Image (cartoon, rainbow, N blue to C red; front, side, top):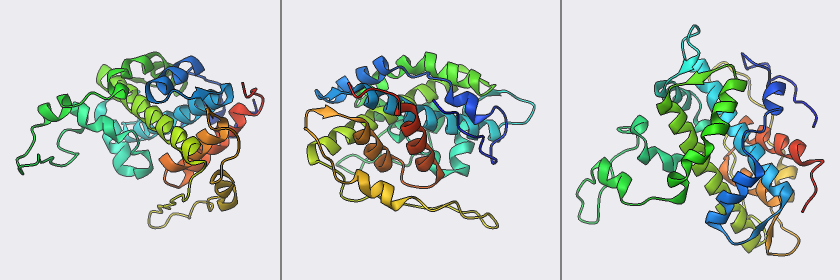
Length: 258
């Protein structure tokens, strides 16, 4: 696999070293997909989904490191909140937010059918999606990814990263299954966020996304391109989407389809 050049806007460990890490194994990916769909998941699809999840978690960890004090390598939940506040692209796996004390008070007020406020404790216990119940499966991969970034995290933040990874991958599986069922995606949204005084990022490759919008092949197997299309749905635009698609393609270029 070809190593990625370091992105100039990042600090700390080189991106290439992160690309050499495979913390989320295809067997774990396939287990998550089995919770969502009976469809077969090809080997290249499992590697692509693992790569996308790694890219997203790497970006979140990098954002948390930036939010932390320079002298502190052990990340805390507040660093995660600050990272998301600074970069809305990182707001993924948001179904986890209702189940984590880190995000209490940040997710708005939920009302029941009678207009009564639902307490957060009831809200968290009212439904238990498999992505939340199985979040602990990601702990080893999250810790490995943290080490590759030269960071550690308190247990509460590891739990949050586990949950975000689990929910994100579960949503990715649902969207990939939808792509197979509907034989493509009708529309991709794109949002470009630029702070005052910053240069605009390079434009999204519209032709590349368009090639993912029409699916070919049989309808019983989730393939690599289905994962790429689902990624374009999950990540609404900007550099994170581009990086995730590029790294997933490179991670699977020598992987068989079976």
